[in-house]
Image (cartoon, rainbow, N blue to C red):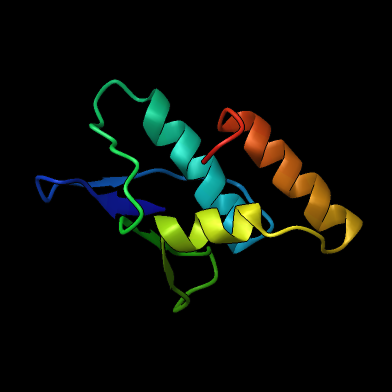
Length: 93
């Protein structure tokens, strides 16, 4: 997981996640807790997600993540994941 801050500095962190959105949520939490990262939660921050499988990369913005997080319903596993991420991020991403 990585993102570029407002000064153009790229920050990266490794997280273990089962889904793309779980990876973004965990990364947001880690970036917010890191004293070396000036993380401003803006909707257009783009995260780069590179799974361990070679040649695969996904990109989504903070706004896309927040839209997904606020969307109700889904499978019980999806609801549980969203609830866990909301709790981790203080209720609002």
